[in-house]
Image (cartoon, rainbow, N blue to C red; front, side, top):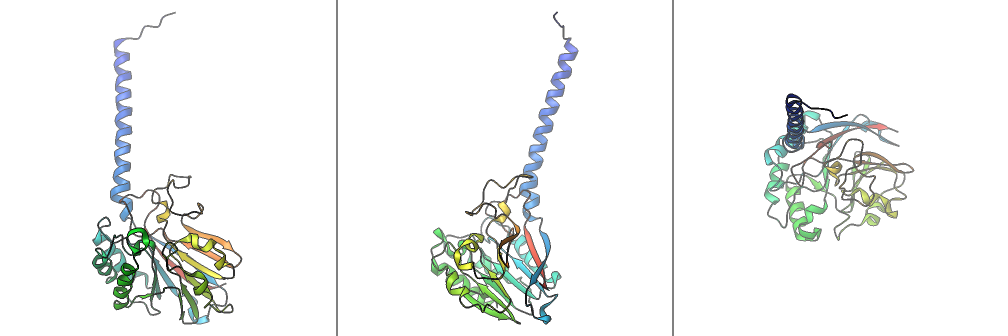
Length: 290
């Protein structure tokens, strides 16, 4: 039996479909504005315990603040970087560590912006330590002179850059490994300087490095960055783009072997001004006895 549809019913359906289309368009526009205008500059301060076996008593309760992936340059808003870095003072850090990618550059053209941002870094009683990331080496991650110029500028600002080296911080051994994708990565040399019977912390920009056999005897925490948390992460799904071979390395804490923990910071800057479900991060670790 044929069913007659009145003109008024047709009009109501058209109105409904137009409203649905308008609602979907509005939601898409709202999502775009959020991912472009809001989340890239909505910094999350993440508090995290860091238990370390054999930690000296005087370090219990001390705070380590981790920064990563500033990407100073043409894309990241400079005032956002400066404001966020200056705000670290409110966190009362005892030690500050930066895990690479200070700038996005082809050569040294963005060096002034990177150093300008770092001038806002507050003092810390136990020091300010850093390692380099792949972008700190310029085009194709192979321009050693670019990295050398950055290191010279940072050290004038009293930021000590560890390039396959180890320093003692009030009884805690801190190892800094140069970037995995550069031609100066040498985890074997660096970790060989660590005494096995002393508490240790390692800094290495790219988390893929911890899967190399050089780290098998290391016991302690490794702090990394590099992934930006995927930068755009669908809810309940892994991010579609990750610059790592080990796809489980996205953000946060991972068990990477007996006595070994990895923490991946989502970074402060970005390569493209877009973030979704991966807010920029500053991490505050509180040292504790394991």
